[in-house]
Length: 147
Ligand SMILES: Cc1cc2nc3c(=O)[nH]c(=O)nc-3n(C[C@H](O)[C@H](O)[C@H](O)COP(=O)(O)O)c2cc1C
Image (tube, rainbow, N blue to C red):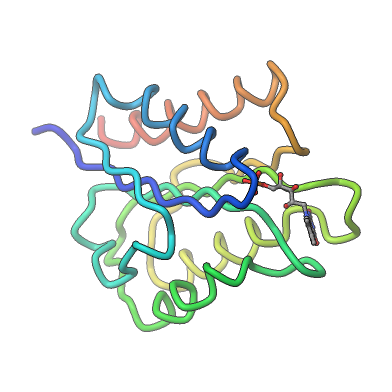
């Protein structure tokens, strides 16, 4: 059966949206993929997916972006029932709390009883070739988890 993978992103200036679209093109031949901007996403829907990939920047002083807050709060009430997940995101090493949103989302998805199938990936601003490889690897790990 073709797995269904939800890719949910938060992006202010486009980097994380581009990463989400790149993930979709990595996965589309092997899975049904749905890409959703986080303010349109429903955390209570996540257990219906076979896997979820969250992609987010970090904002303020090492915090989640504003538009992720409601989704994050809702996640606390969701039992993911071992739904597979992975997290990645572009943020910036010029800030003291590099990529904290990736950490917070990873911790919360684990706390919500998800099954983490790839190490979380933090990218400094624009992805370089090595970063794109890490993104591809994350996508491969998600696919491999269905074997
Ligand atoms: C006001 C402001 C605050 C930020 N705070 C952080 C931060 O605390 N930690 C971090 O790693 N990046 C921080 N960033 C950097 C963004 O996360 C980074 O530019 C990211 O690549 C933006 O992704 P996007 O293009 O998808 O919006 C901040 C950026 C802005 C403009």
